[in-house]
Image 1 (cartoon, rainbow, N blue to C red):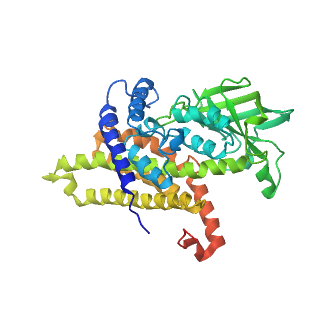
Image 2: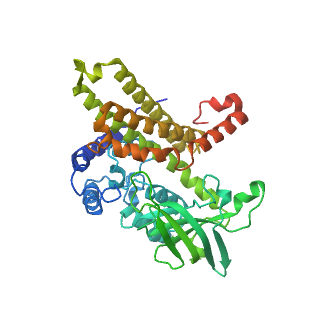
Length: 406
């Protein structure tokens, strides 16, 4: 097992690191940097994105031929972590959710160049934003079989009725991926073919944003919205894969997307310890720096260890994905552990910073408010543990086998 990264990737990592340190970190505390939802404001974002593009640091995950850097999952793990040293780095480099996951799934599933020019290329270019509409009130969340939003076939079109909510980035998004039911609910595995995925444009009639749902933490651009569909017409040509392949689309999208969350959360976790570490080196208490107190060392060392464990879990899952493996167990383990680690790192940093950590004088309180969602998004931690338990019971000792090349 070789954990060394290539010289080219290391050089690219350093360029991302330098850009974040030079262009983003100094501006985080500037007046006008944040909008009313605690995200980077649109004028500042446009300026930073233009600089990132000019330096060739754009869409790490997309093919070079389409304007990206063509990184595989291991390369993404290295660069996403570095980008997220600032909470606002990923969106500057166009590797932030939900656009990141949507770009990846569209790049894999769209069949023609005309389709990619219509639906994918504007996302890569950063001229539009997108959303993935799956979760429903009293319907699907971690269990897609509970989907009740309907797609009824009429001629060559599909007519959509139903409701979705907590749809990240919906306000201001132009491109939407929608999961809807195209067959009545069945029992057992038959229900896996009851859902279908579609593409639609924000300008089409027959749907609306009912509300932008207030949340406890900072928001992504476009918030988390409730959508109502009351006759949206989608041409059959804007269907993703075949009728009944909706669950397959969600699996293709959400597996790697869970791992990219981990990549970014590791960067945020490291930033929390970075802020706290600088403070405890200087802060004096009872005649010595806080960093010299044994209790402080236990707290900082424990959080640092958990971050490193998370990096190893994330990198193994990324490597397996690059080998063509679905890495379902590894992604779930990384997602559970890194979500916990993000909260622990932010909480530890606040405790070490004291009142300063609880204030808005540092970015740590921002991360703390954001961190609570990590154990919920893309499958609650309990769901992932349930899946892991089922895998272990089915595989026994083989659950722990070393995996990779045949």
